[in-house]
Image (cartoon, rainbow, N blue to C red; front, side):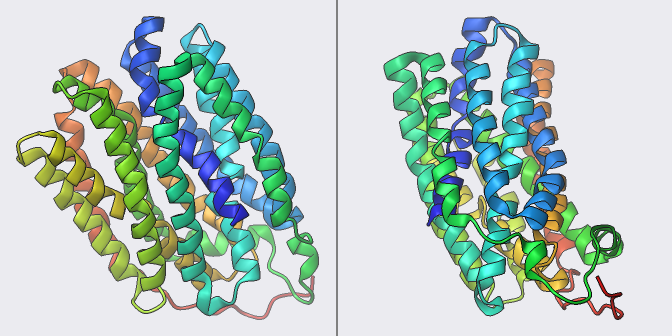
Length: 390
């Protein structure tokens, strides 16, 4: 439950960042690409720092990594509030929060869960944690909107930054003996684990699929409010849509984690990516109304982070839990490269063409691609030669 609460705080504030795009760019006089580029850097920094945060958590335990990340998250929100230039805004929203997210989201939290939950229940446990965190995200979106309306966008950021400091006491419940000290006998080194995973075909395919996941969800999460505003929708429609994504994400992530106990996880992933492509195509084809937005948000919510439990469960299933947080960080790096391109291209192509149409169709094509490449993934545990004594 504390892991889910940490995910709620870290992912919940970020889930509503699209609500800040319009007020910040209007008041500062920035083009949308400035805001989009900062969040693109956030996703890239998150991805780059992910393997290192996971490596530290695997070696020294999750608590220290989580506590440092909570402090850095709060600092990043404060810099976002006071930044007067695009470069300073990118430092806070992009670099600081990106690195913080690497240390207080799924790879590190799931590492603790995998080390403390029986193998046959891991997919379910990760689904429960993601679902509980998703419900928090559902609550955080209207909270963020209410804070902006009541206190203005700057003070709203400061308040949420203060809330991020709650990660520190919550992390105490995830304190454990350093994982490296728990094991005895022959051990696989960090470099051996990286080399093994990088050569594994299924690991490469999982990374490619996660790239698509990042592109789609971050583009939609950041640019959907502005897309709706451009089509004459009120801000309340966008707020409701983001909240619905968070709400239905609860059911989607729990269902994906539970189904992962009974069905091949590669089939679950292929189905999720194909359904995303169909949902986006239907959204563009149907007339745009508030109700079509709400239905689209609900469907995308079911598919939003439902890729997380099966993807992470496959990584643990193939490679074991010794270096899980680090390897999960590498997979998530691919996700964040996709996130970088999704949010940045959204702003860049909008400024170049005056609409988001091209980016929507790129997201559809990538969804079909991801569905196909997940089908050949092999979920069997890797067979290693005898390891040298530690």
